[in-house]
Length: 117
Image (tube, rainbow, N blue to C red; front, top):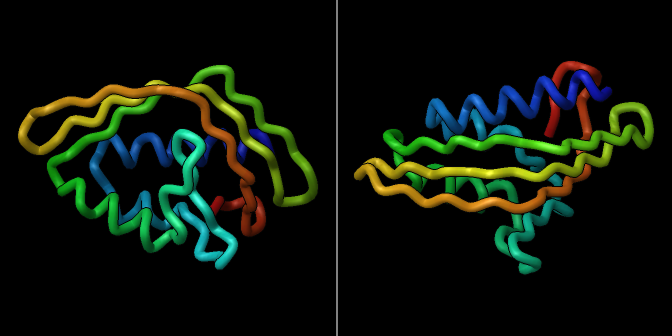
């Protein structure tokens, strides 16, 4: 499970570098229970909300994220809690940059061992 989650996190990170927002959006769960909190506040209430925000970045935008101190704790077959620190830089189509960082926690569920959502 740890190797699978680590590989999927790297795949997701590479999509940000490539500006592959539609593909990155596929990583978010379509579960009605999905919630995305940012700075302790509910930011997105559905994966569709996240996908719309990603699409708004534009095809020329790029997100570089480095993860550190990543902890992947398997909870059950196909289920893990993931905690990690991160540092990100978002480069807009116009060349502007915004850098931010923090910590991320997520409950990671896989469909078999092939992928994550």
